[in-house]
Length: 78
Image (cartoon, rainbow, N blue to C red; front, side):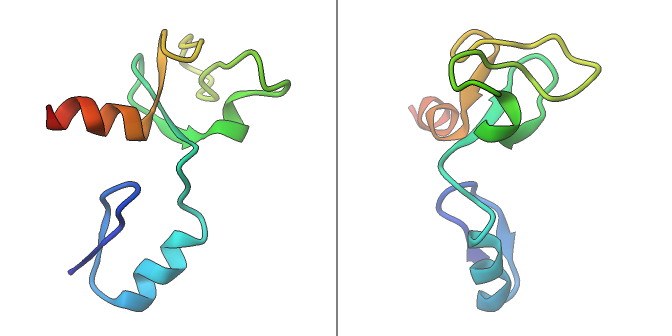
């Protein structure tokens, strides 16, 4: 098994992991309201105001409803 160090997803081959790395980034966000995971670019238009791109969700604001996946993982490990 090959596991991505950024998002913790596992792949059966090293090639699958390498292809995944092209789209996986540290800028991944997680919505505390709906549980959706998405890129930072999908959550903001101006770089200041953030909201969940899920049409059925009202989550907004970094560290209010939206969290960086890397921060969530650190909190879970403690």
